[in-house]
Amino acid sequence: MSDARHELFHRLADVASAEVRKLIVDAGIRDEVDFRNIDVSETALAELRLLSGGDTPPALKLKDGTLLRGVEEVRGWIAKRRG
Image (tube, rainbow, N blue to C red):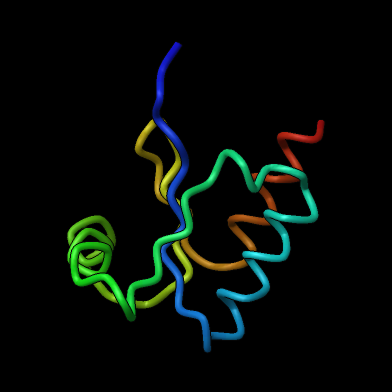
């Protein structure tokens, strides 16, 4: 079994990041997602820039490497998971 987890690149004071964090918690998948605050981790910020070409959160990197950017992409992915 893989130890890979999803990674959420976010900012605490960002409204869209807060909405995505709430979506993740409400979906019951918080234990599958590492929250990476780009304001306190230069490593997380560098990874977000490498993945997305920018530094605008939120962005959810899935276990398979797919990058979801913004609230609507994350909301759609969660809806698909629920079936």
